[in-house]
Image 1 (tube, rainbow, N blue to C red):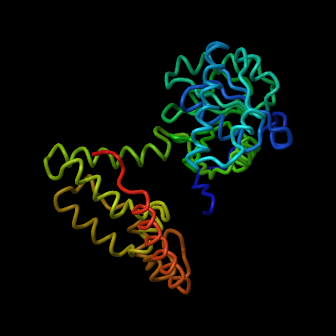
Image 2: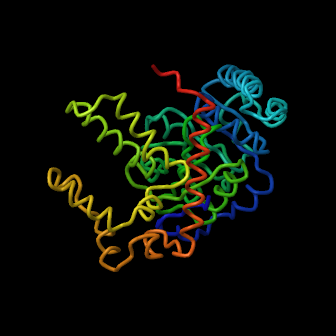
Image 3: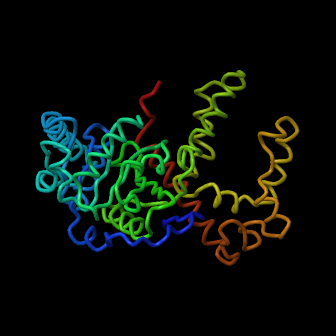
Length: 340
């Protein structure tokens, strides 16, 4: 899948030390916060070949979670979720530090993954910033807090950004990269390279409330919850519709590719229909109106949000059909999720 960059502006070039070379050459990493998210991130980066220090509120907590990660890795290997040799690789690359200062002292990149409380994050980031090298890149796994606000205790804030993994991080391939206005372009590039080296995909987004991932995720949940509250459908039936209709497409195509294939004129008409009862909630996006008025209707016209050439439509349809059949076969092989 092509890496996404969205329309986030390229951060300004900084006069701070160039971190890109160091991070790509040595790849010494520290993860501060060894719980479920931090531990998973440490697994990902260590299995990607980096040397990773694991730190927490005490040496005992870091050691306990280090041992948990090894046990967990054994279980994943036995289940076929991690490749053979993963636990041995973790033992080689992952180590528990006695404290934050020891973990970050020689790190090229530090990922903060402590609880989602700004006071705790500020305190942790201040310790990281004081103990780390001045050219070390510092990332936060926050999913909601402003990156600019989090950068306040960080010296050389041009080296700071959001690096948001999703749960469970060993198995979710996407990582949200969130520079604040002062993050340097070299920092963004170096972190993307590091995340790609661990087998993940990245998207760079602006530092706005909720970023992108959670704005989309919570918008869907908000509408779903209202449908249940209004007794239009049960939670079970809504989940069934989502996972067997438009959600079925989402592993292969994002919302813009789906819209282009459906036809932007069709989307434009559907918005007008929705507006009969929900005029404000489903106001037609201006960008959609502009494209339709310009005759850019998606794959049928060879131009839309993604500008797929019309001559590639048969190839795209063939891929889509093959993907959906493969997805259905996978679901049948796995069987139903143990929810009900």
